[in-house]
Image 1 (cartoon, rainbow, N blue to C red):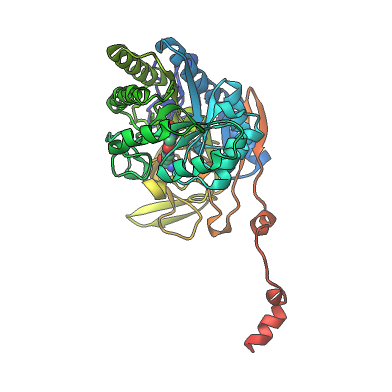
Image 2 (image 1 turned 60 degrees about the horizontal axis):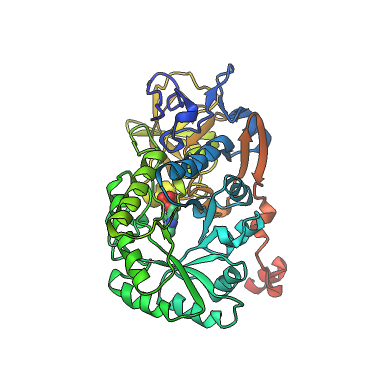
Length: 471
Ligand code: LLP
């Protein structure tokens, strides 16, 4: 069922309404537990957002455990319901990789997709075992591959260079290395060009022209156990057709791989389902997406007379995107007569680089005055020294003053994970909220953290000496 959002221009919008349990988290701008308190404050996971900021500081990522768990269950249950064979949903942890998130997702029975030694380390530290970790990436280092082999992960091989590196490494391995092959399907989809990956001119995956050569090469490597094929066409996709097409293409590849004697039993169709950032976004529900891809794979297998592979999908954004909001504190305002009013907040492109990178559009709410009429149209400016550091170009909000708490919705995916220390701004803390409890899951960076990796060569340690040198 589509989770509706209130659209009144006179008071707070975007609150989930209707049957929460039946809503698809990716179709709600705010987390599923969002409500308004008697004090007119936004509540998430039973916690007052204003209290959270007072307790944990600002800016603050607030992650709603119930929304994340609901999305995990929806993927898991929909795959069980719609796919007649074995299935596994794995979380694309590039969306937000940290110990707590990995642990939650794993406790819901999902696997994890990692793309670097750092993400792999975090997943292992969170308690995941190698058989549930899929290691992606177009330029994995020898160190990263060695660690993945040691942990017995599934390695999704991207290209010839990696394949040859693995052949070299397998001579030291105790047993064959379990791999999947990433193929480029040549499928176009409508999303930002930076996050499209399935078209032919992509840096990821083996070119379709080379598939048979790759299959033949791999079939001759005793040290490589190729259990499956993988493809991913892009991110924040609302259309179902490209995913349906992908399923058909991949089943054909599977048949071809089997003809070369590869023991392929897994088909990993990637992630990509979009979420609702604004009230005009209308993505399919998790259930609808899973149903389409499951049915397409099952039908194609039946048509070609091949056994059903274990179906794997690897969503990131649609699992965690709507589970989090970022709370900021309002600072100064600048009125440019007849043009616009800038309202500055205490974060911006360092905690959310998506607006400046992809021109992403977000929605804001005044968390400490949820029912005050939305009479102002303002630009929410970040605090970084860059004109492009604008969180929202046109936000409709109540009148704001310094100290108000502004919440930006749907910041769970690719915000914390892409955050930087631009302008030496410390990265925010993150709290996990559930049933009225709040737990810190990422500490706020301190000023000392910012210089922890700096090294000052001895000849620069005395400012006096440096000054003398200039005199
Ligand atoms: N699998 C692979 C191989 C991927 O490359 C990705 C995302 C996913 C799964 C998960 O896709 P999702 O379900 O989250 O759409 N930083 C960009 C998004 C980059 C996506 C990279 N790959 C953004 O902020 O929009």
